[in-house]
Image (tube, rainbow, N blue to C red):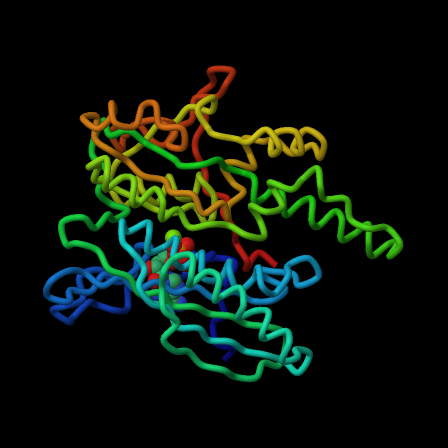
Length: 344
Ligand code: ADP
Ligand code: MG
């Protein structure tokens, strides 16, 4: 009899992670938070240690025909620092695992590590170890970041309270729109190698895709403003997906307003040119690595005029669902399109 075979696409990434986590109970006294947040939380006595890890695969997460290796190294660190930031923490160390095929030269590895070194300098973290293996196909880079947070300052996905304000930093959709431009220019180049890519007009969104920054500046500012986010997550998969994570983990619903979503003019203009709706890019695009967090109403005055923190909605009862009020004043459900790499 043939064994039962279930396709990965039936579960998707989040379903698969749920399935794995159901099989593991947290047993150790020092394991405060396991699977299910941006980083694991470990009690070190005085404070909490945070651990986050992310793996990037050539052909899935990056394309070396337009991603310079130094940028890739930088981004691989930044995305992990972003997960530490989203716990309201400060990164301290990283380890780096790479798998290399014989396509790569010493100079290529040097370039990758130059980017990693720049990120270590910028985020003030030490590279303290890793592993190096050969890979049958392409480049694999997996980074683990370790960080620290005061026990009473840690921010989980699940802490949002009724009437809390939903905040997002920076602007959204740019990284996705930048990727569309890079893909288009690659197609043009492949069809005619004499055509050089025209990217000047798209400098901001291309940079959003190739060199994202973790918002450690916001973490420091929140501390200075004496604001404790009630819930926080970073935007890797897309605003829609991350909103639903916060709502689900907090046992609440939420409402946001389309006209409050921060979208850069270049994102908007490129969307117009490429017939991609800017709001769709903002909600489903992903890879912006901005922070999404909730604060209590008492903190409203402290952020209401902040140039880089945007108030996009509020938390309500779970029974009211997760909704967006559109510019045309329609109410639509927020959905998580995110990235499903298993869709084939
Ligand atoms: P993020 O987008 O913030 O990197 P993920 O969606 O990748 O978060 O992961 C969500 C949670 O699931 C995290 O706690 C992560 O550590 C955990 N997780 C992801 N993949 C696995 C796996 N293969 N085994 C165990 N835990 C996993
Ligand atoms: Mg995250």
